[in-house]
Length: 438
Image (tube, one colour):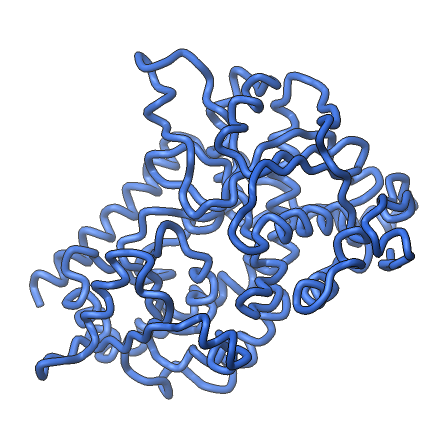
């Protein structure tokens, strides 16, 4: 499955039939069956069941999907292995473009008899969830909630959480596709061990997107008080003008502690901080992406209270610099999770399983919307230029996967889920008590 840029494809005038490969077949020899045996998915795939739980009984009707239109940025329909997009509004930078690209690569990875079923969905590219769960609870309403795919959710929303666009690259900020970034983080972590890093908490980003980030900047050492924070404001306009010389994310893994703090809402920076082999300090996160809910405090990260941020960060850093072995273990657990359970194969498998489970709930046969445009890898990548084209080519799936998608874990039994959440809550309280006694 190679990308062929004919004059037709260069001008976005249609998708070649060969690009879709709907009829790829596989031999059924014993050896092939063995190759296609699917392994088990990581535990965080269980949250797919939770995100779709509200529609398990009712199913999803075309009216429910239409009701999400006012809050969606685009509609995506797949019919017979072909992708159609109806765009409703402009989004920030190329979020929608690279989300579409990712879904097209999923179809290239799993074509033929393993391809996605027909489906119809609405998608929002915002940093905050759009559907409040309280609006769809009795006695407020008996109407079923609109199903809306988004990059994040929170405790007060109904979001079908989907991997974000940056897994295929973020050209505006010169952030490479995730598969390349994983390799670069792995090499960077091997070059400099945790104990050799600066014994402080590091953050660099745009401080003007939230009050929390502005408050973090106040934690920089001053008035002879060293809060053990090294926070730097990043000027993206200057970075762009200078060719992103100071924006290599792997070169920012120079401190023993890395800070993750939300901006306007959820931040795409989370996975890059976790990949640094440092102890990630999560500052009172209100939002989650598709992996966050399975991360355990004091195993994958250190929780930081937002109401006394500077003091909480200093306590975490001082504790880690004393109990170095325990601190290193937290950093290594996060890095192992990122490298092994968030590799690109699992990102695609999460998408595949989520979209399959969603399609099972549809109570109607999807049809192509009148205003939709067909998209395929050829018509997206061939006319593109600059970093957009480079990142598309770098992240393009070269051919069908040898193995089938991983096997979904069963849904949480309510007692198991409740015990998991209680354990997380108990750990958070334990950390608070440790801080109070210090």
